[in-house]
Length: 322
Ligand SMILES: [Zn+2]
Image 1 (cartoon, rainbow, N blue to C red):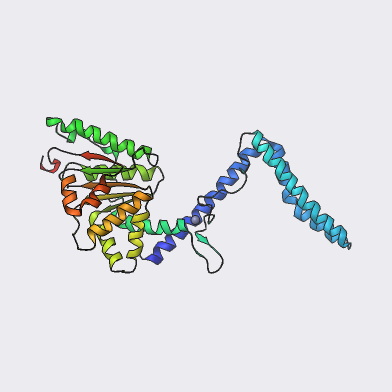
Image 2: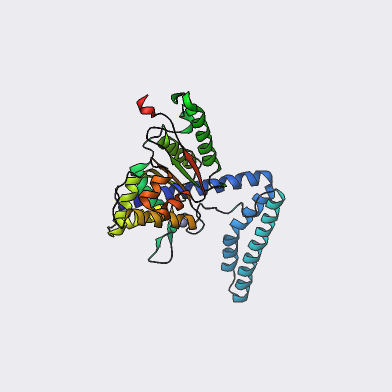
């Protein structure tokens, strides 16, 4: 998908959202009016106000009279709305229950803000950035989810199965509690074939199903975004910014990306540091242990990988070799 195609797809999604908003409002109106018919009468009166006022204005040539009619229309409308709000409150409903509500109050789900030339709302930009990664990384493994987690695949010897059960519980709790986690970050280390990627995909599936947005990348995709940012390639500035600002970022296979001077460690530091200070959630899986991470990226990066993080060090037999 090109950027233009992504924009078009997103505009359609926003249009659908606006229809949903209208439908949700209709539903709220219907149920409030069913609970209190007086609300229906007041709303009906409000709807008829402009036509009534116009009819009366056309019947007179007196300018003062016309002004009085206009003021009366306005005052009746305001008074009716106050009555409606009071009645809603009595029903235990929010006072703005009969107004449209939006996913994004800033752009009211249009995706645009400002006068001509309008620009994309931040919510729209964020979704655009997210889409770039969704095409590549995302939902490639829809079957990898907690519901499909088969603990019997893990050998019982050396407590591998018991430990895995614990890791799974940690990860599922993390995904269920997101974004209100007591500890925001997670570092999962251990040799290949122990199920790290699977756990990462499970977290991703659960969090996004709960309606939150997240970006899941391999370390190589992350590196590509960094390199593009470094060399100011078009589109790529966007990609790195998306990684920095994603509410939840899942990085798989950290340590397998190329180690390029002035790029890998430097941008990784920038990324982790920005995310820590913005209090965003980051989950990292790596074949490297804490010491190796420190050797590869330096102390500054490795200390940020473990900062405010749940650390899980997986051990055991490679499942792929069983
Ligand atoms: Zn918006």
